[in-house]
Image (cartoon, rainbow, N blue to C red; front, side):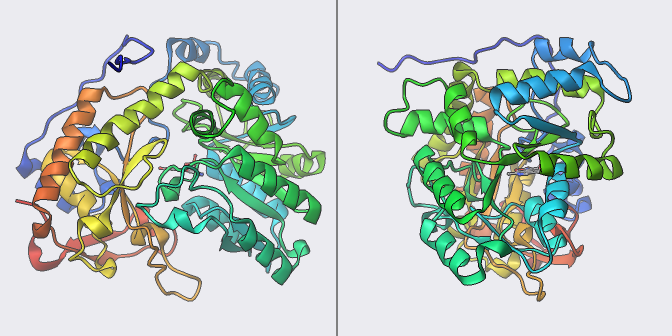
Length: 463
Ligand code: PLI
């Protein structure tokens, strides 16, 4: 018999959430232009929009908040953060930023020149937007399996060395400021990169003189997958695996809002003093002093403590286990999801779920809206709307058209996951009644945040 495991924490504070009526939800989603980003959170029952900034902090983190040293410069909490980053990530130079994209902005401005190419193991929205804003062209070098939702490759985030080599040979290493290496790969479904792949990629990049900037946003979850799936890693603590992973990179951008279990914060870290020095010049313009980067002292303290908590093996096993608990129920009911189940979310494959809706009518956006209408569960579109448009104005039409059920860390119980599973399964049974959407307002960048839609044919809900 497989013994069941429970949460490695107990609950000290609770936050009530409201169950809403179908009429209320119909009004709310119409007012939100059928975009789940534009819903008020008070109208949401179970909020799976994102795992970003939505974690529950521990009592130790809250205690740290009371020890905020709110000095303009040289706050002791900055030194605690620097120490945690050196200890857990292994990078000597650290600059706090208000969140991950603050770090992406700074590194893109420092390293990318107009006409450069930035290879990456699949794009992320804000990361690519900053690379393009700095004049770079993003080139996808992830393995092809990553674009196939049903392919069960254990490390779908791996870099395809052949594609990377082809790019370097074509444009020259001097046109490639860095390889952007995400661990895990969010847009592929929270899929990990193997240690072996990182080792090989690092050897190649070192030989060609190309630095590796890691998007380390969910690196602890990536380390857990390595422990679980990669030969010879089962007995190592995730903390050690993580240190080895990052030893193959030259620096990272980091959103503290994911793995480090805080509600706000991020940082840029590097091994290169040069890059660090240039970053200190930019951070004062855009974020704040290099010793706070837009964060209060208390926020840096909470992040420093969260960084140490995020590598706990029992926590990570439970965390990945909860995501899997939801995904497994959907798989057993025949709902098409991205496999293997990823680290921070279960991704519904909206193309297979709603084959009658063309991608130009945003099936993933329509499915996210239908889910909200059915049960008050808020999810996020990660498909054609998120991918946006190419510089020539055409839509990307990515192969992956997904709805992300993103699980906040330490927030919901498995019973909440049961409610979500029931709702998705209900929609799947009635899927032929869900209609596509027409986009009626489209902002020029990162359109998914604020775009507005209307249902085609006037009917959206499953019933
Ligand atoms: O939201 P930020 O600015 O702290 O971080 C940006 C960011 C960078 N890389 C990756 C892989 C992310 O997932 C990411 C933010 N993700 C969000 C907001 C999400 O909902 O997935």
